[in-house]
Image (tube, rainbow, N blue to C red; front, side):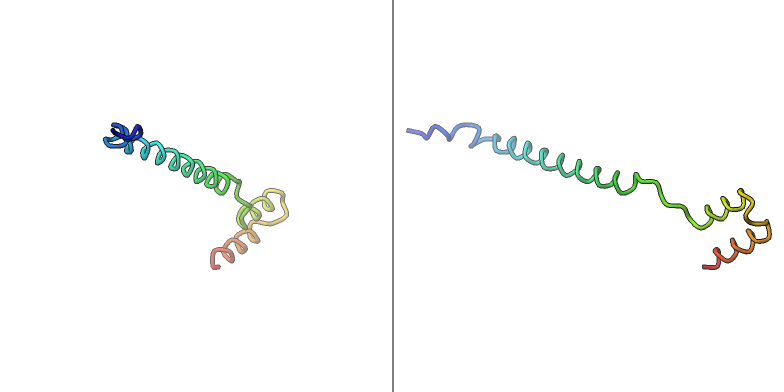
Length: 78
């Protein structure tokens, strides 16, 4: 008399089906977590850089063209 659980699902390729379902479940959760973290990290707007601030100050008239050129060359050296 055979055991009721030892049918084609366990002796054949049924274990492969369950392995595939579990693999897809874990990989889907992992992919969602990775993309969620990546969008949080790279989706934010970057802060203003030194050249952006200098250009804004020049546009407002706080700096002359000569001062702007000197400051840009000083930043480029660093």
